[in-house]
Length: 259
Image (cartoon, rainbow, N blue to C red; front, side):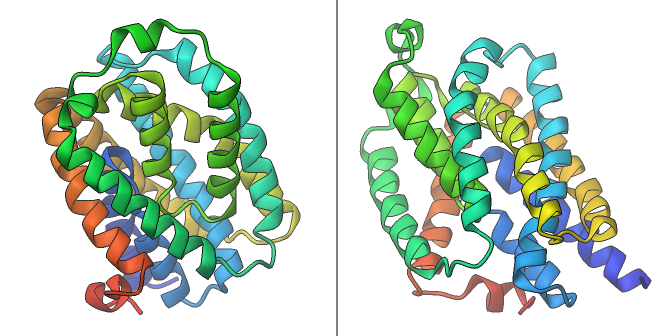
């Protein structure tokens, strides 16, 4: 492995860790970078899970240290999401994700409109909703989110944020803390599935993971210090670009010069 490959992995990881921790969709950068470096798409998908795991260890630790992580709720919601992620990882073996990507793009646009025209739900949260017990509807929603997360991961952060903020009543800072905890818990099992299918390049994933870790630490620190309004702004900007990319209106890979 030469120095240029190491630099690409670290820089891509830094951006991915930052974007994924505050919003989501950063995996479009990591997957594209890994494919550029010569990995088959399915191996890039599996290898990316190593970096995601390392990224979320850093983010969860930082959110926990600042007392914004509701571990109990995160663990409860992670159970159906984790089961869904296992299913999604098995599906990912040889399924074309283009149709799903288009559907996610449409969902992101709907989410964007809600964030713009009803910002209070995202910034202030709903304490009454937070205290409610997790119902069957939430279980089904997080199971389905888990399936998509296990399948391709790109954009799953938005789905988790929507479920946690709109469905469980948390603001964007606390919602992000729960989001990274859920992803941290499901990623090892998802990783095992890809390992079983021999779809992981460990050295690439570990090096990129160092960049992800640094980006996640920076993002979680900024989220705590600058609050939910800042996170909402970041999410809106990233959603605009991600939804346009998924719907084929722009090509983020070409813009980034990595494909």
